[in-house]
Image 1: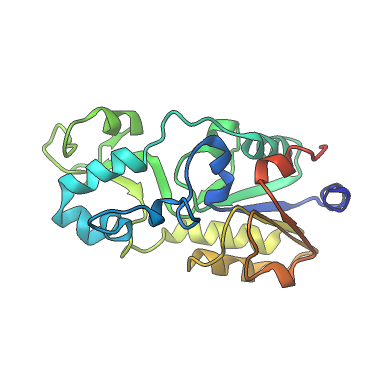
Image 2: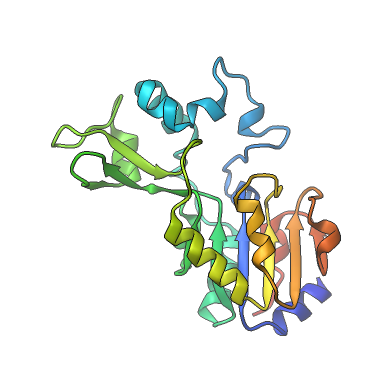
Length: 236
């Protein structure tokens, strides 16, 4: 922790790159750990149910699973989200790049957030383009439709879809500009997101994760533990 504090004190352009482990302390389960979403038993795999093909071919089943597992609207920002918002407010954090779709960084007060996999809080009619909130999608029964009759799709990147080009470019530019990159709460096994770390050319590469990752040996500092517990000890 002393080394982490020294790195934070010496940094002026921090970028935080986070995965599902950032939100577990808010009560949102991750995907690939032993008790994660992808280890649970379903007749159809979560990867299939969260695919573009399944969305259009089994839309009612998609939304049943989506509302049950992907809309934790009760969740509140934890110590990690709050500390990152504080770092940004103090002018030390350049941006947050996240693989999460829960919107908790913005709820904590972060302004510059690149959501690589989209957000449950943006939902668009595929026919007319009208926008809907996550709360409206959660309150619907069955397949949500717009007043025009069009199908409403959550702005989340499904399997079989490409990442948004502008979001990717913004994230890459921020990481390339950073003097410190903090990678946290991610197994770094999901591509293309995991490859974003390769754009970092700054001074300090820090990794915070519960379990070891393929990046550990390349980092200046590795801390194994809960992201919120560790970040909450930083003094800004």
